[in-house]
Amino acid sequence: MKRRFDKYFPWVFTLIDFLVSLVALLICDYGLQFIGIFEGASFLAFVPLSVLWMLVSVLRKDFKIPRTDEYEHTLRRHLGTVGWFTGATAILWLPFRTPALQVIPVLALGFGMLVIMGMFRVTVHMILRKYRTKGNNYRNAVIVGKGGTGRKLADVLKIRKDFGINFLGYFDDKSNCAQTRGKIKDFFERAAEMDLDMIYIHEKLDSDLVKRVIDFADEHYIQVKMLPGGSLQLEKSLSFSKYGNLFVINVNEIPLDHFFNRFAKRAFDVIFAVVVIVCFLSLLIPILGILIKLESKGPIFFIQKRNGVNNKVFNCIKFRSMTVTDREDGDPENDHNSRITKIGLFMRESSLDEVPQFINVLLGHMSVVGPRPHTVSMNKELNTQIMGYNSRHKVRPGITGLAQVRGYRGKIETPQQIRNRVRLDSFYIHRWSFMLDLEIMGNTFGVLSNKEDGD
Image 1 (spheres, rainbow, N blue to C red):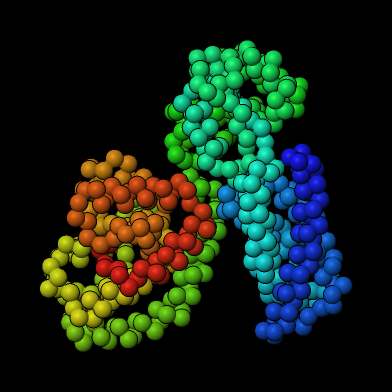
Image 2 (cartoon, rainbow, N blue to C red):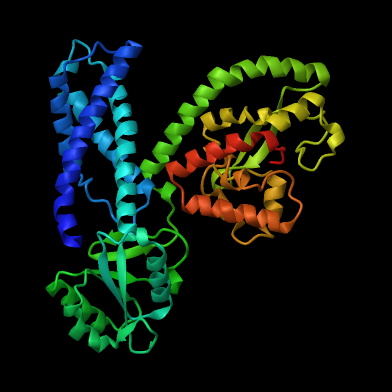
């Protein structure tokens, strides 16, 4: 079952992907006609486009969905396929080559394919996981050399049935547990009879022994993976750089170090900020501005120095919610509640005082999602108290963040609260994905009614 599945799956996936892409293109065509930005085309005009989609998909090997990949990896790969398809469509598809190339319909088709085919790709990924959970499409695997990370891997394989990796046991000279199949020398005698697909090698094995295992695997067409020791199990994704023929591990690289990820996040920030500023903030400024001025003297906006990416200081913009004092760096988090105005209290409870920060997003000081920025004085104090605190400035601060949607917002009352904030900020930075940003934004809308300003 396991090998037969892999033999036919690429062909089945490619055929279904072609048919779904054709349906997706027809849906996009209908939608564009409905909103009046495209005159439409015949059914036969979309068949070459579906063929083009299939060719791009096959060349990018989208039919290969690694069993241990999460859904965001599938979507990230799909985004690249859509980009290549949209570019090729703009160049090759003759019906669009009118006197002036119709850019909007091409981009709209690309967006439609991004959404519809993205749903299809994730659905296929989910079906594969469900299929593997039931014991199908599995891989037989052993671990050569137990060690601490070997035990952890065995535990993961037991829990994550959706990976479809059937752990058969260890080969180790020191271990003698129930899952030990024998000593390392026994591996070379028994492995050929075990129908193995994967071998995990612990990094602490002798280099000559590692080479011998790899040579054996090559002769028997078995995949080999190396298990890093405890010093490299840092709860973060590791990547590799190549220096000639030498590979080195990038230990503290984060997803937003990659240009494509930074570009995608920044593009989303700019588009979202422009929509909010034009459709929402432009109406709030005159309305709330008048109410703020009527209740107390002072400016409409409250400008405060905060630390941003790489610890650079920027002017954070908010609607003023308190009466003006003579303090140059007023901290509303620690000021007495009696200074909060009535309209200020309303803005805080509804989070409207935070909306001007979308101007900071547009200017590049902030992101829609990220670690919340603290005041300069608080930043200096916490940096001396919390280990690793400064690492939260590796990315742009956000209007909302993972710590905020997990309940760590408002006034900091205990050291544990700030430690939990930093821990969640670190998790976000090292596990960033576009899907995580969307999830945080969705959760933010769900908790706005209970929010009290404290950032």
